[in-house]
Image (cartoon, rainbow, N blue to C red; front, top):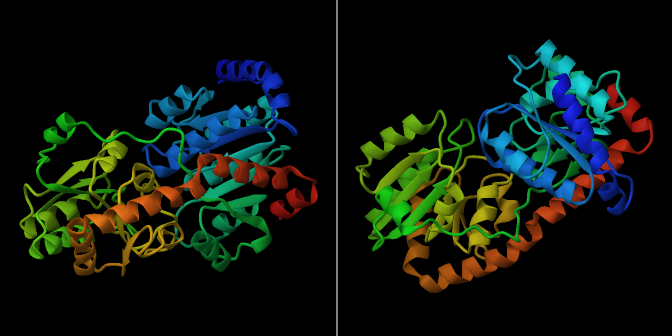
Length: 395
């Protein structure tokens, strides 16, 4: 750990002039994410840290070693501090994280995942570092003393949507401590669609229309079985489409069984986790999200940027991204028949698909990562201004 701290300290000194040029005080931010997998939240961390670095702020990413997140952050030029906590409250990990905060003189420690909140909360005790937490999921906070304590330690809590904000309020978090900062996409780097050879390797027939859903298959909010039902309903309505379900997780087995029951073998292919998920999404004729609830639904932003029309369930934060009938078609949660009918409608009406895609391209401009970075910086400034907020957060 000491060698790692020496390396990141050297980086901090070298970047001081860039920080001075960025306007305002240069902040030192330690980002923490202890997840093993790569998903929307991890991509947001990488985009945010890279954006902050471009503005001259000093960032470090505390992540598990040998993960895609560690590699992606390193490629973005952000120093990586490897940490592999055994449990949520791992005392050794807490000690190492606190040492890092002290060594680099961190202004902010930003927890990006649920388990990271506990580590960051404990590590910040007795330091000058302010805790900021991003809440991405639409799950209620657990009502127990441990959860209350760790969220009480946070000076600012960032909700990725108004929907998540309402859930935090219902969980007893004061409105004055919550800021809504929606996730963003890098508009300067649109995603190219997957190549024909890649699609062919997945069994995609170039002569048939392609429906793609990219989703982590985790309970309780994801619902791949409704996607399976939707593809079956669309085909029953005469739509000769094929589909890819891209993602992994505990619900994959249930989706596979539903696919077999629906007789969709060879029509709907479950790819598991794919590093090229966004390329596959960009190759779709329709992008789908069939969730039961969503914090925001960043895969829909990716579809908009790629110019792919959207059909989705009206789940939580999805309604803050997609305006029904303008940027996509929304149907009731859990209604596979309605979802299938909407898919068939878009695929059978090219003018409708083009109109939805064009509106989506305009809509996604409001979700640029640059706006996300600036809004997050405002939350950091609020967290680090004055001592009263810190005293309140410690109570």
